Figure 1 (cartoon, rainbow, N blue to C red):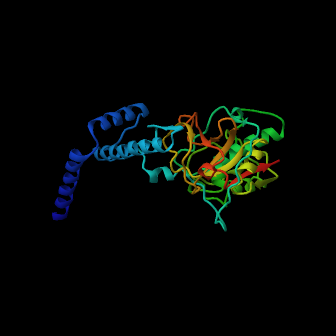
Figure 2 (cartoon, one colour):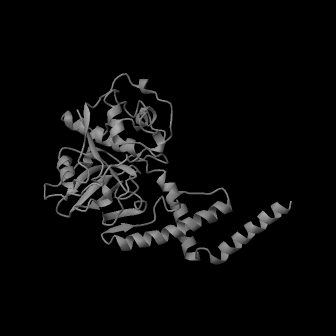
Figure 3 (spheres, rainbow, N blue to C red):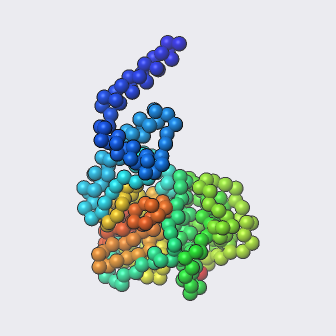
Length: 314
């Protein structure tokens, strides 16, 4: 009984402290607007108070990111009540052991290219660390179409097949795009309509489709060689890994400050040599960033995007 009373008193004290030193009324007004805009609700007042605190911390982080990236904007979005740890769940690139740090080779001036029109929209991986599967699938979809001389924006292969069936990767706990390409050398890739995405680990059901395309091999771009990477981009989209630790609240513009600890699989789809930027297709839905995409500064190997790049071949 004494223990229960003590716990209750501690809880009341914590609530009182939050009420006196917690976020200001203006922050809470903005928080309520966020809840209404994104139709978010919580089961308890305790959860509400906790998320309000997270939201207040994220507002400070957004301000800092805007100061550090003068060519980009960061703003409140659907992730504004999530902690850094919760966002990391969505960053499932399992970086392999490295023997040496990549040496950066800057890009030479070249022809701008943009493959964004190969898709109708950007997919959403949900709360599953399957970014590697979405990165590999996007590169496979694009390269398969280009190899066959056609463009079908409605062509969509099954990320869930990779999540469930690629035994070298770990499903929602992360994986590698190279492992996905290796799996697809031996198995036909199902259409998404045949093997729908569930955003959770499941039992492999590769028999859901009787036939599907395979890649013949895959090629790794020399690590850190931005020039070689952008030269390969001229042939089609490329699977790349990035440090996405500061991406959560990206809204638009060109990101110019970023880390290089690779944790997220994405797809390089465009390069603009006039504005010196590259465009990355993410897998957090079209409501994030610039219609689901982000631009990074060129010639700086921004976010380490040139350190682990690969493409499938047909």
